Amino acid sequence: MAAFFKSTYNHKKELLLFVFTNGPACILFNWLFLGNRYFNDGKLFFIATLAIFPFILLLHNTMSGIGRYIGKKFPLYSDTLKRNLYTSLASFINAMFFILAAVFFYQLVPMLRFEVTFTLVRTIALVVLVINMVIGSIYMAMYVFDQMKKTLVQNESLKKEQLQQQFDSLKTKVNPHFLFNALSSLSTLVSEDTEKADEFLNEMSKVYRYMLKSNHFEMVTLQQEVAFIHSYFYLQQVRYGKAVAMQVTVSEKYNDYLLPPLTLQLLLENVFQHNTTLKELPLHIKIETNNNDTITVKNTLRQKKISVSTGGKRLLALEAKFSLPGFAVNETPDEFMVTIPLTYHHDMQTGAHEK
Image (cartoon, rainbow, N blue to C red; front, side):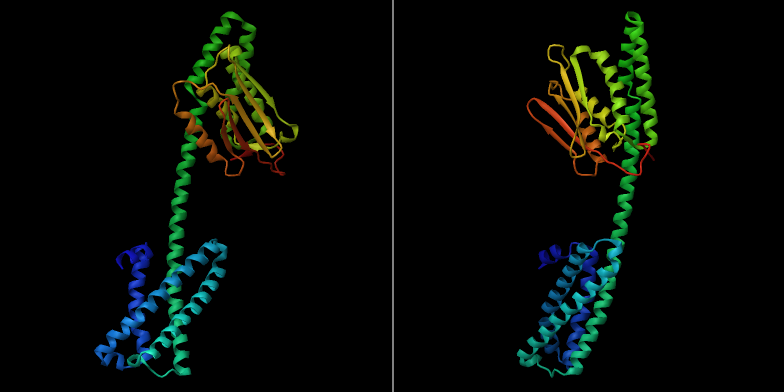
């Protein structure tokens, strides 16, 4: 019995509600059925209370189940009126069924038998209605309170996640390793090829200008992101030479589609982080749009022997940005591929959505 109560009433508040409502309910209905003799005869009191308890227990459990089912069926705040009406009606019909079943059972036991009249049935229906309204109101208050708690917890979690994403984004923008490598490549070019050094410096300024500006936008156009990724890859190609190659195939119809800024850069950074770059075995990267409003970044798999733990975190962070269906990560023995959804807003003319 203890295990039953523990599994059925997994919330302390619901268990307390059961204890404080069902005891008085057993006594109240027995008094309606049997009158004052229920209190005057100790043996009758014990047997009648024991007899009606299973009916009250089943009644309470089915009412609780009905409430949970309707709550899941109509979970939104805008469904409150509909949820209350359905819950009240279903609970009233359910309560009348169990109480009338108890009345029928009492007629089968000589000691518990009593006269069933229209007045009695009407009184029972009125009492059931009142009890149903009271218990229903209590459950509704508990439901609203729990929803408020969940909302507060979710809001707090979202705030923390947003702060963490902003912090991670800032770390990406001022990545000291990327800056050091870029400056190292620039230093080499200055002494070897000043014209190429000027070009490198120009592309580098584009990269950091975009990185700094992207903090002001929640979404950017694919055209902007691709232009940035060409500059970003140029810096990497100067560093790695013929060991890396990139092919970008983007349909013009997707130029104004939106995605979070630095998405492609994050994916390319993940590629360089986890794969070796050799002139004998070039690392090929392909970026291409698909007909289902998605864009795919794929690369030949040249995994480093020493695993790097940050890549998984990057992909998880990227997946968290995309709540729409379409995000997918696939891996074969020769290729790694990430597909992300693109969004299009007809009212967005500039291709960027400010925060």
